[in-house]
Image 1 (cartoon, rainbow, N blue to C red):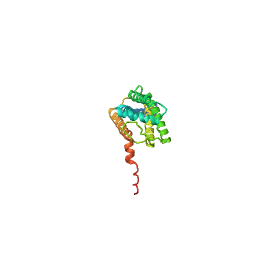
Image 2 (cartoon, one colour):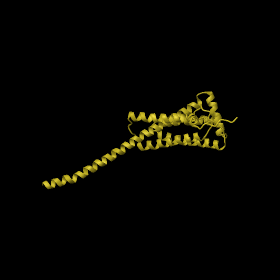
Image 3 (tube, helix red, strand yellow):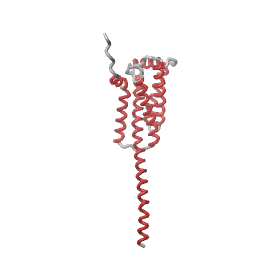
Image 4 (spheres, helix red, strand yellow):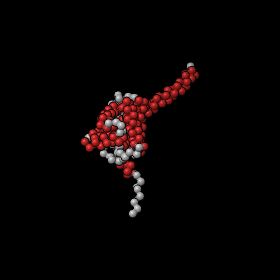
Length: 213
C-alpha cells in the first residue's frame, strides 16, 4: 500500500509542474496583450491630437483660411480650393472624433493612415514639380514643403497603423492609471515634435556658409 501511494504521488508531481508552467505562460501572454493596449492608447492620443489641431488651425481665423486655400491651390491646382478645404477639415475632424471613441478607433486610425498617405502624395508631387509652398498642416508655419514633411507623415502613418493593430490584438483591456499616464505622456512628446517639425528641422539644419564679399 505504501509503495502504491508513493508512486501515485510521484506521478502526480510532474503534472502539477506542467500545469503551473502553462498557467505562467498564459499569464505572461495576457500581460503582453494588455501592454499592447497602452501602445494603442498612445497612438490614438497622438493621431487624434494631430488631426484635431490640424483642423482647428486651418479655420481659426480668416488669414489661416486664406493661407490654407493658397496651399491647396498650389498642391492640387485642378481642384477648387474652397470646397477641397472644407472637405479636408471635415475629414480631419471626423478622424479625430473616431479615434477618440474605442468603438470606432480602428476605423479612425485606418482612415488617418489613408488620409496621411494622400497628403504625402500631394506633398511629393509638389516636390517633383518644384512648387514652393508651405505645408499648411498646422496653419502657422511658412516653411516650404520638404522631405522633412514626408518623414513626419511617414512617422504618423506608422503610428496610425501600429495603433490600429495593437488595438485589435489587445481588445477590451482594463487600463491602469499609471500606464495611461505614461501612454499619454509619450504621445504628448511625439505630438510636440510633430507640431514643431519645421522649428526642429531648422534648429538642427547645418549652418549655411557665409556669403563671400
